[in-house]
Length: 319
Length: 114
Image 1 (cartoon, rainbow over the protein chains, first blue to last red):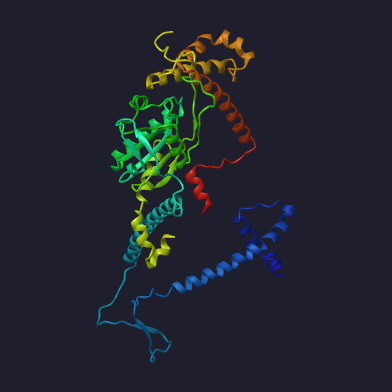
Image 2 (image 1 turned 180 degrees about the vertical axis):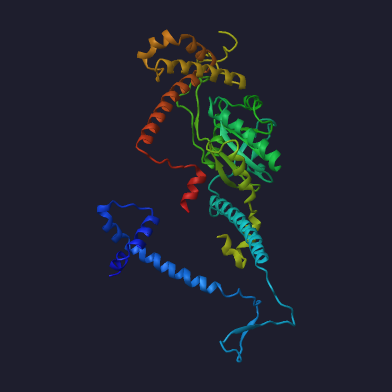
């Protein structure tokens, strides 16, 4: 019925078809129109809507302040309503542009704050997850020798400073030197850009060959802050176990034989309480690594603070 | 043997640790040698049937590479060349069938769990 009605007015149909950007070959013309009849109908409805809106917009915009009210004028013949304005307390007139401006300023300000907080909480949650429940997943007690001073270096030396630990060996052909160079870039960028000082630690996986002297000599080529740690085979093995570092020396080695050590290549970021935060791998380059470390440091909350929060009514926010 | 004979240990001497300059020298010789191998289409430098071709075309590059790098490094780099090539071939194959790479770095991975 409807489609026929529209079809009976070919001019309207054609103009709408043209508007919809479709061209029909004469043979298919009829079916095309039928297909589009629904759209035509919609269009008509919209036109009607538009007409109504135009009618409405003829009314003046409301100037009733917040808190104002209507009162029916009994003497008005057409039932016109007039607002009562509370003149005693001064009108709360608002101008649209000021309100819009206030809305934008406050809105974008809040948006910015919430986004920043959201990001920070995410990092915090991730750190919390990495800490595990009760016992830390990565890290733990160890005792090694500081190659430059000859003193013992254990997990307590990680306290009061952010530390970054790397496991490697001095005979490493290509990955370790590249990674240590990268570490040097990170340390410098963190210092100059954000005034963050990390305690960089290099632990050898090859204690048989990496004596304190060899380590000191090797680390001279890299950032001066890097602390080299070595120890007996068992001490190193224990440390690697604590940090879940895999390493393997080839079996049946003859003394003095040249060999390579297979090991996992990760940087371990440790917080000032000596707790593991996050690993950084080869996917973090000179620039992204710096940003990642900064982000992790910003998201850090001391354990005492975390404990305090648990009892608070808003503790669910941090879960 | 020249300046850098510290590496040419016969297996009985403790090979000293390479310093930055020596490392870079080794990498440079390696790159030159591998570039030469590229030119003659050789991937596996350990393969015996390639030996004559290498001797003929890359003799100088090979001896420089062996002079500038420690023994363990030489075999490591030669093996790495093979695995790098395989990795590249695999990637090309995967790209051809339109496979999507998944980032499995620790940060990304922990993000995926959420």
